[in-house]
Length: 279
Image 1 (tube, rainbow, N blue to C red):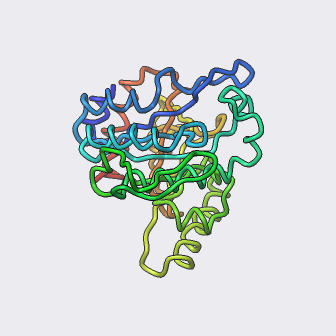
Image 2 (image 1 turned 180 degrees about the horizontal axis):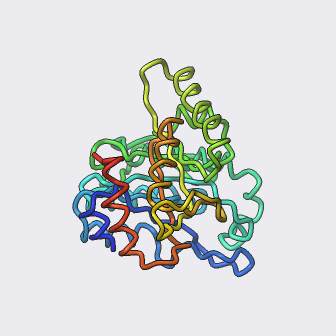
Image 3 (image 1 turned 120 degrees about the vertical axis):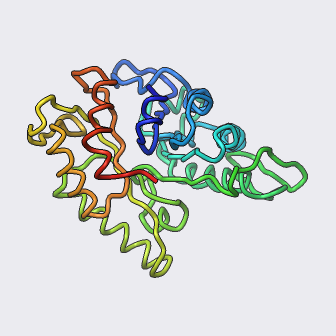
């Protein structure tokens, strides 16, 4: 399926990161560790971006995260896109021995990302925090990012204000909201980027959603849990509406599909992707 998505011209493959299975939450995300999975997919694909959606960096030591991410980045020749998040499942923190760290996870998130950036972008960096330990300039981590830096998209708010996200990320990956709300959020993002970084600076706004392609081409778009169901013509209209609202990437979680995934990918490639070519 990954080879098919790659050959058909889709922009990215997204791997979720759910470290533990909580039956009360009801969603395991996916079975495989995202970095192991993406390394495997790197060998099976040629051009498609390989993305985490999203790595819970508060539960991963940033030095090991740097090693994992930079390894996948090299094995894929620079195709890794790192979506990062602070985690929204309180049950996971005690499992990792972080009993009192769920509420301050926003600070934990900022510290982890700063150490990750230093470890993947600088030689013999000096970086650290009381939570994670320190790089003192006497040891280094290898490999570094394939192209100098691994693109990082913050997912949701991750307990940060939008100004901080604009300054410290390469883009914003947002949860599914309807057209009536996405315009306000996407516009606020672009306004924040321009205000904090200057005119002419571009940082993309991406959105993820559960998706089901209806077999009838003209079936109107309708809401489902955290996403939409639509026929291909309505989907094209919907994506154009997102594009007009400055949404630059739309990641589809195909879990709700009621048709074979290969059949859906083929239809999307034939009738939808030509309107939104990936470069």
